[in-house]
Length: 553
Image 1 (cartoon, rainbow, N blue to C red):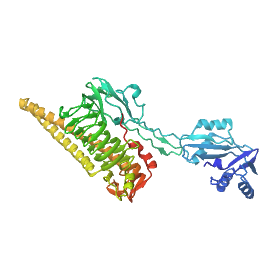
Image 2 (cartoon, rainbow, N blue to C red; image 1 turned 135 degrees about the vertical axis):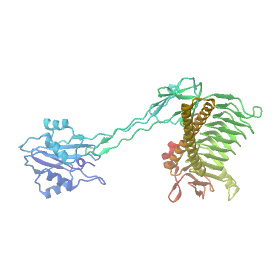
Image 3 (spheres, helix red, strand yellow; image 1 turned 90 degrees about the vertical axis):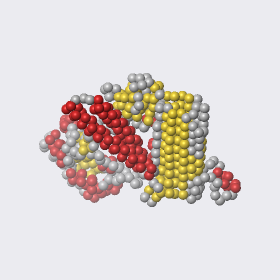
Image 4 (cartoon, one colour; image 1 turned 90 degrees about the horizontal axis):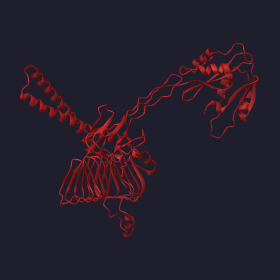
């Protein structure tokens, strides 16, 4: 608390007056040493016993302490706690012998090591207007101006649906499948700005942070415009968002996929109005199913969305998966899984987060693994505990449920393999360029021939392939980097279960195992130096809420 709030010394008509406010229990109190030091600075001749009497009385009123006979100005300098500004309190003498000058005030400031941001205008105003007994700002530092983050202007969306300028944008949480035409501007990126450092009045540097660039890249059938300011569509189609890239894809709409249609493979987006039957497969850049999927195979480079159920399905998904419910499925998902209702006896691996949206939803049986976070309403079939009590059994007839978070060894291996592959493609590209240079040197010496032209053409094709492969692997590696970063933020991951958790549920975090010993509710499981710990969900969930995926409808 500033000294001015703890005590106040003022001079009126040559009399020194002291005010000490009434003290509240537990509040800061005036320090006798501070009061005496200030009186000494003012050259006040006082009776110590009288000062002690006023100090103990704490009347809250100004009390007479002593007469002041001075011939010189007293300058009291006070710094704010963060050294952002300095104030000076001028106490005039009873009889002035020498006038107050700006040089003297500046010298008093320099004695307190105040070197920056001195306001000559304010100092001259104090002297000209004789501002006495009133602390006045005479120096200010410069605040740091932090850089602003870059952000995208999503021109392919209707104007009313676009995020506000400067808002944080997760591409995968945006509505896609917007129809666009060749040459249409899709995205404009506002670049991040540099910060401007500041300083305190004592000359200490206040470092400003630089804004973070927003990363979005042109994907298939998109490119930068000649000025490099916008990403534009190079073909007509619909917008598809994947990781940090935007592409324009062709779309294929079918009524169903079954034995009559056979397997479906399409280099674009597949929208299925009905169901996907048993013993068929669907492969595409993105898959949308309005019905259910049986014992089929779904394979997508990007998102997969199933409006109803997955039953016995095998799923490979490069980005994120959403379904109403899942039963007896096997799924390998690059990033996020979002289920509306329930998951039964399934084995699901996802690189980042897994969650069930419905407050009455549940997981029962199977093995769920997520790179960082799992959020569930309940574990176990609805009414299982009541049935168990009615039958007076000692063990539940339910299948055991295993929940695991943390970067898996398989995920780490993928990360290392991608880095290794990208390096090998770049080395191969270097060799290609050396061969191309060698052939060009030969051509300069001996001229063109068909054999050399054919060799150059083959090398060009090979070099282009190596460039594309290296960049593809580096982009995949960047996705793994983001997953690794979130895993570090969550200290290896966390499992949130807001409802019931039956005994026997297995929680694995960072390869540490915890068997739930007795049925319980509302627990968040996380890792510390002593192993897996559990707390109430409410507080910990607040810290990690922002990292859960929100897939658009």
